[in-house]
Image 1 (cartoon, protein in one colour):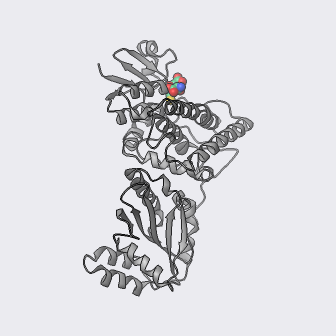
Image 2 (cartoon, rainbow, N blue to C red):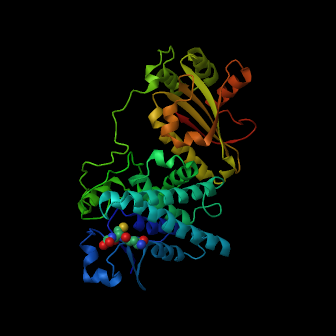
Length: 419
Ligand SMILES: N[C@@H](CCC(=O)N[C@@H](CS)C(=O)NCC(=O)O)C(=O)O
């Protein structure tokens, strides 16, 4: 008998086992047409979990409930699984972070979020306490992650899987950018994890919530919606009627009409960004003569500025694909600046730790504030304005635009362009 997971989808608790299974080469079948409130109330289901809660894993040896236990079971199916570390102390640390994630992160997110949706009575003081406890936990996590890519050792472990599932719940339901920006290392860690192929395959694209959900006065009949792939979200809709948004006493962070981007209000520039992007893309030969010369002929220091950036935590770049994913994630999140920016990001070195350095052209003479506000990666880099009167700096710009290799004496692992 194959492993069968009983759960409605999407469900962050079910994701824990599914991601662990992907990393461990374990096959799990998810029950089709699982109907929350119906399938988990049948006598057969209650024999597997007397509380009637999901997820439950059916195995050839019997059933298991509690999502962390299920994820541990799946992980242990693979002998010497690196998800469980490689020493007793690593194993202990993994367990430590699993417990921390469950009791300090997940439970406080739930204590903040559930009363807002009317699952339990709302009390302002309890909410304050939940938020304060969550901030305390995230503060500790942030400090831990200031010098680390993953929680334990140099690779993803079960602790990261469980932490990412719990954080994902918070990021997509209640923890706005305004809230999480106090914890930049947690943000970087979270987005790095959820952009890993196995996480993405199970969790789908995650969008950070724009505003804290308003307080509901009525008790909705089912569980809240969780982050999900589009097709799964469709299923979830059937199973989870979205609570009606009623007039809230506290209109926190209510969406306001979008003000015009200040960069659109700058005096017109003779440089047309799209023309430069076209020249860059269309120049296939003689790049220096055509594209680079063309760039400087177009460049307008009154309407644009050039910036070098240097990743602040290069020591953490110990795994090539994780480093490359970090940079790809950054470029994806810069999508909001496409009208105002062009960038080159170089991943430098033939062995770890890799250095990440870049060159950016931005509309305006300063680094745009809105990009800092919207894209947390910006804070992970040191930014230096290019002095175009300095020939050496100009030459560095040229080298970055044309992916010169070796770059500053080192091989390039990759060069990515934002255009
Ligand atoms: N600690 C449990 C929590 C399980 C849980 O609360 N499941 C919810 C859905 S995420 C549920 O089944 N609720 C139905 C109910 O309470 O009847 C775990 O991690 O598996």
